[in-house]
Image (cartoon, rainbow, N blue to C red; front, side, top):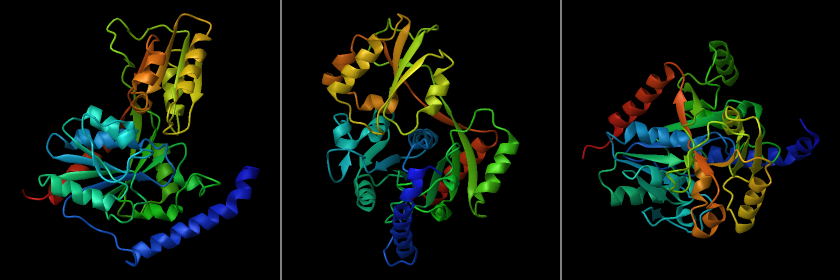
Length: 354
């Protein structure tokens, strides 16, 4: 452990004890948790982020929306609004946040809502849409006021929660004992080629409870897509440089993927959920111009793109070869069928008869 982390350990212990007492109060019923009459699936982390939550929510949407009336509910991290908001075509990142905006743009048939008070948000959704079958709670693992019917905990393959520490010396929001609340644990961002030996080792290290199901997922990337509507702009097959800018917690899987196009990757890494400014755009544009070649492009993530959707910011990069890279998840081997069945069986057995 690095020296600074060691110095921060007392603060981590203090914060962890506060969270431990809070969780005990919920477990004992001193602070009430509300359970709902429709399926509620919570997806979250023990860590501060970077586990691939957004593509896992999108996977659940794709799995369910053809047969069920689906809604997502987030707090809308870093939005400028307050209270319950039901997203619509006019919504922007300041109204609902970047991840809900991404769900809205990709899945028109899904109801997308934000509310910092998740209990209130669920009640509003059920009142407005009596036919709703399932609500997906985004980043709600520590939101104990809701008792989800199914709780999914994500942990990064390279940063398993068992190897982490409480904030501020680490990234954990609560002690690892909190993992016991999960019905499903997903090890995310694993290598696409994944050995059974590694799987067994991780399972031995995690020591899941008998009732917990553990699955392993990996990231997949479709072809980069032009940000601006320019039919003549095609992603080059041969590149000398890629300028990658991101405002996400962990960009290492993205960098590894882009290395298949070129080994020369310049990265500009902004804080997670970063609110881009015109100064940032100038910095990106200058970094691109300074690359010593003509065979170069700029790439960002789909989530970052949501925070660039203003005329003022977009104009800075309008004439540059800017692409965004969507990301999806898949499950290994028999995990896919088992996970899909676990989810669909839960929703089917618990949805209301309308």
